[in-house]
Length: 116
Length: 110
Image 1 (cartoon, rainbow over the protein chains, first blue to last red):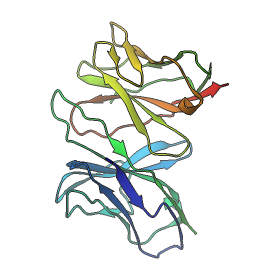
Image 2 (image 1 turned 30 degrees about the vertical axis):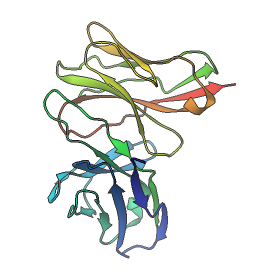
Image 3 (image 1 turned 90 degrees about the vertical axis):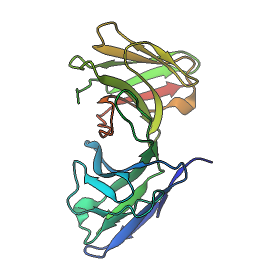
Image 4 (image 1 turned 60 degrees about the vertical axis):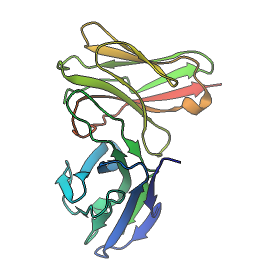
């Protein structure tokens, strides 16, 4: 089954304790992205990756890192989490869109992170 | 990207057509209209997209006005499982991020 998976689905942690949220897709998509969703603010893009070893900042990259060593995986790293990073996080993937064509993004089930 | 305006909420009776409007009066010629939905904190789900012509797939129909300043998503026979927040997004081709607004919360009522 074509899907985007995220782990963990739920995580409660403390300020400053490094954590990684994994994202994996089995559709051979080049493009992957991380979003966070907060009440009243909608979904905002954190980082995205056009392909292996290529990553770029989205709208809200501060406090996050990503890596793209393999096509299927795109982990989100919080080196020193803070309470304002408490949020619902989504990973998404798609084929790359070019001029004149667009591909839909497939989203993972979400990771609910609480930082105390 | 152009901004969109959607009503914050709508109700629809089960089995009836749900018509969700979206205004995108500043859309430019190379921007597509996308619709996604999100069912209670699940990951957003792609529904349909179009540029100028009306589009239909197994989930919905998309009607875009001739001047492209507004569009309507139609769920022809709404079910309780269609209760969700529906997002209208305009976006150029290329890997620009999806910009989700507040969407329309559709409640399908039995």
